[in-house]
Image (cartoon, rainbow over all chains, first blue to last red; front, side):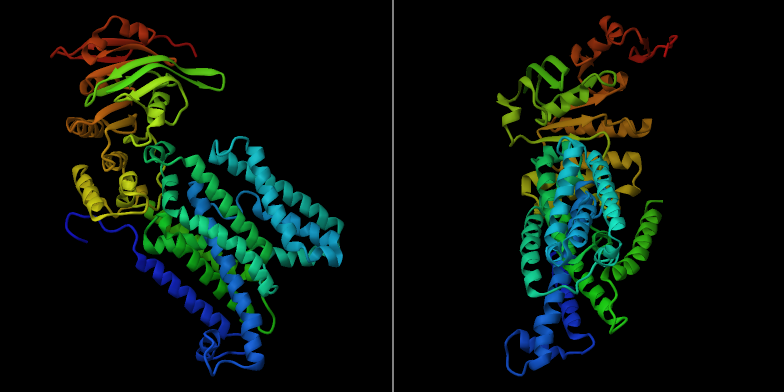
Length: 338
Length: 253
């Protein structure tokens, strides 16, 4: 720090470190599994250089592990970033990406697809889940009345809509007990369905949403002030909230449709990044996206390898790591404020 | 110069500000006084350009609602700063309008340093806001507004959460800011304290301006008591300075 100047609030080196962590996580995840692949061969294969992987190993890397790792990274980035954005918009450190009824709506959509569809509709599960999530958020805004008249009204409306969707989902499950297991396994989250087609459509929506959120990340800091202060700095808080929530909901609904409900990423990762950097600014959003992606890629590596050849649902891993971590963060915060 | 003419603000069907007319010269301190619900905070929000209104509010002959380039700072009554934010990070946000969001020039970091020093916060720049006392927090809010280099500073009840010692220290700081040419408009419950600092007192009730004038003449005015429905009594100290306190009466609730 120069004399007579305060320290910089954000440094690009932090973002670069987060990007490096993601690269390392991806390399570890494509390398390890029931069959371990050599780092050097993986890199040579990906860069199209000679002496890369061949035959089954090449197929394993390019058609099985790589799409799964890429989907995990996309979903992790989407959930972590949306969580951080919801926390800023609702000025609530415990807000998570499933806040406005997205999860329950998506769960209801998925249950409708599984219970009524048989073979045909089951293939449309992601679309049903996506529509369910988006419709639930739409209903939340409708119930809340005026757009962002008051963030806490919106929160309560989200809880009401979520409860309604969950109740309806439970009713459907009761009526179709055969569907209990597939619905349950979807709720716990899974990346086993990953292939390049899923990566393509999920990536399309998630990257659009992330692009918007990263673009507005600097202005999002205005939402951490009172509305009057934000306005005095030339920002219309209503407009920014609307754009932020729309983009975060798109990212969450897409992530849920692609991989089911994976909990804790949206709370753990933003707190981890903000805690380590000791910064509250949303300029950390890109770093949060990278760390979220790395976190889920590593969690999925655990899901694949810990009980190999069996697989654990990834939601179980994130909850196992996330819940104790979350309690640790809460305790540390309470100590800090005492 | 701020000219407010025939200003009215409606919420749904209620008129919360009615036909307000005020002329506020540059570099002065005006204090809005009145009971809760009198419309003081709404008037501040409207002067910020946040509220739709009828009538006009002009700053140097330009309508506030149409002039986004105006640099008016606002110091809120209740801060809503995230617990995990540091003092320096919060104060730095005040530079956003001048520098652009997310930018932090060396010049801005110097200004923030300077204002932290001026508000006696320099040693606390890395401290998280949720660890601050009420007086420190108020100074942080003021420092954030100051780095904005505003032409006008609106303060909503700047002393309401503070003990007497900190009330005086915050008001002294605002007085210093006024001395640099910034126009100050504050709301306050304590008319005596307001009259000690502001050169002008504007008494509001039910969305209207009841009394408006030079501080000493307002607190000596015979209409003051009726403005407060006879619920105040005015006493004089030995040095002649008036003190206004709530009058004890039988109250029916």
